[in-house]
Length: 473
Image (cartoon, rainbow, N blue to C red):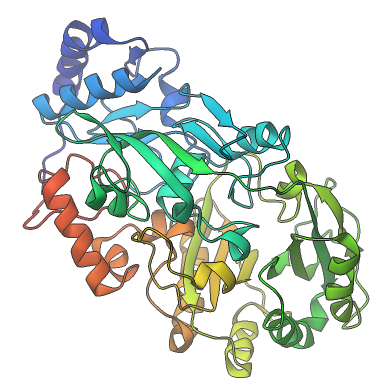
């Protein structure tokens, strides 16, 4: 195990960075004493809080190149952060490259592509693409960084129609551990192109990506919030219904526990509800016809389903918009038979006072089950559903929440396939064993080979790490 560096060593690294690195930057070196340091290190999800040796507020790819070369020369690991939605491990002994200022978006509406820099959030891409009647394969939250989302696979409201976001990448610009900026395509560096799309941040700092856009202007979407008492009828009915849906229908079912807060709609405040979520890529009348059978299961306490301009697609899930300590766990399910549903409700149903406030089961299939035109490292395409559970906690409530999440996953183990789901993986799933279980054995072995080639010293290890062969850090 590596030994933490001392305060004197940290100060020395900052002094050297001021002298050797900063003159080459468009951006700035930020020490713990500098204004802006906290802005770079504090992410959206505060379950992991890093205090890097120093941060580089990168302004472009050249800043990333110089920073990676400096880190390799001085034996510092590299951490990378855009929005900090998916933290992994602390980077207290690292050089942090903050990419939030790398905010270029360049659309080609004729080619139906967009080039996105490393700091851009999905909301901006969605809004700019909508100007041309197009949409990207964004996630359910539009505040998430686009590049990091794609590197983890990326599943969103158009996934069943067009596949994982990683399936629709044209090219990537990436700075690898040797400090080289590489343009990576199916024809140039094909093995790295395969590994980056699904291998997360293990192979370098991706400074920009080019992805496909699709002719989508609206969805018929929103949610039916159903009484918690109806869950034992609601979830089996949703499962059977979802199995008959065309790939244009993206759908999920949630179990939500709402606190007693004034800004929550009165019908939901303080209540446990089932949340049927929809995003239908098609005619609103046809979308209404398709979801009509579910309206008869119970009287909704709130109905938000409507035709939505695509830039409003983030309202469907209503994911949190403010930073906080969000503890999440994830997985995949082969199927969802009656016993699995009973097991789920025994853990988080209306008769249980669970600290888990959000459970979501998302239907897969459609294009998500198809092999992409150019293979990538996104695993377990045969899974039927994703499983996600989350809650907020502080202090003594953290172990209580984590224990409940572990128990839920253990209870559902007979129906699970693989380990954590890469698109939702969080700081609770940051071990080597967890990462290994997130892939099929052959896929993981191939990723290790790519790591051996492109990052043999594990410079990029402040992440959900895939260590190179023989790594003993």
